[in-house]
Image (tube, rainbow, N blue to C red; front, side):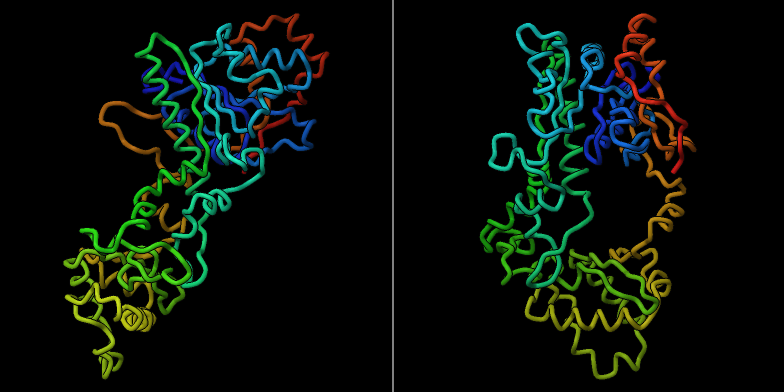
Length: 409
């Protein structure tokens, strides 16, 4: 990657995985790091597609770590790297002879290495070696119990909060902190430990602390009680408040309403009431409280029903026009394709954040291509200085898989 990008010249080895590990690697690659994905040969898992679509700006080499020469090659790659991303359960790489001490110990072979470990559960906890997924991490972290759903049953989001935010993003953040510290500490690397239960909890600091706060704290709308079945959906941000919710429109699409502040709620209420048909309002004005009674929780159920019935009168397009250009904090719920058109982008979201001087690697039309395991083997081996004789032995040992074409999604 170009040295003009912030992470240009940084070499990252990413063991192939799904979701959080590849996302961490993609973040680094987007900002110029050279990311090499270390795959298993296709012959070992029966196909040429790993399910990983977070592969832009990366390269791949497929190595059989069960073959001694293949394992030695992987070690050599890691010894040449600045960063290693380990997505496996605890002790997997230690059993292979690729644990942190091999590189960072007293006799370590790459003491500059940032060894980033990404697991589901804390390595020191009782679930350390168990299988799990995003939903489980949210459940054990106390975060799931805070999420909206029904009054008796929380719902769950896509695997964004634990896998990608608490996992991949936090892992990339930890890597950057360690790289910064390395530059201040004589070039020494270290281990970055990241588990998705803790990562999701850290991201959820505000609602978790609020769940323990006493109701008399100075900011009562956010001083909600613990999310038990009795209190669920009775609070400002968990779906209890009528002014922070989603509403069905007549065409089956939705509007999002999030007018928390009183001045925004008044704008919303004025526009909403003015847009409703007279026959709908006849005899129902008592169903909705005045704007100054926004935080009167006794009226929330009645107000919510009024909003539900009102939004159902018209299509989403109609309500878009009603609230367009206003501070009512009311916007349409767009589909992925609609949002793409609004952002004037391709299917891949823009790299973010924007920096005033430094630039990320530009996205291209082939950024949705599938990265085939091992497709950059020859170039990577040449860069590593592998001789023809060493390559021939690796081939004889079965250290590489069969190389095929590059499929597209």
